[in-house]
Length: 273
Image (tube, rainbow, N blue to C red; front, side):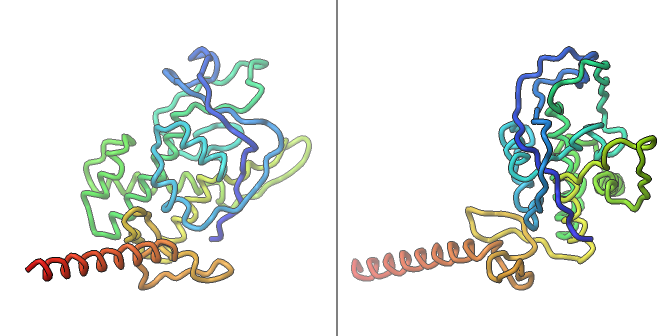
């Protein structure tokens, strides 16, 4: 399954939520909403392994980090309609529709729904990586530690895993569209970065790709293929320790300096003796 192009908003920003819960389409007790321009969006292709390399490292409660990610890589929720349509049913959100004529001038999504998408992807990533390590406790902790569900068994964790991946991939399911002025208005919602990142993960699962942590100490990214050693998007995937050639060079230089420092200390100790 190829990774589709994703919908990229022209600009989004976080703001104080000033609506009245129960009337304005908000989720109760929300503090932030994320707003974006309603002008025509653009599309772009995601870099490889964006979810496991970058989204995994984002704090899902950091408004600036989440909004910055969306501005750079694309929306997580559908650009219109139900903002949690890509999440499994029964995730606990209750949204009251905007009354006719009171819709906001720009699309808005309560921040906790965006945070839930980040947590869901992070849990899927943590779950699969724990599975690759044969870490049963890590599989259950992937969900419980992110506040998504009280998961106590491996079977419950796999149910969560299946539900989150399947819900995210639902827009790509085969379907028949019948167009016509009396039938439908507008086009099918474009693919979100959330769905596209889940496609990347699904592709790695289907290809049995090995995930590993970059051994460059300051990096620590999760990756499957080393980037930057070939042209035209070709990557090394076997026998590699670092996520990029830059990380490999930096770690080799760091180890060289350590060996040099150790040799110098050895010489000084010998001369002092």
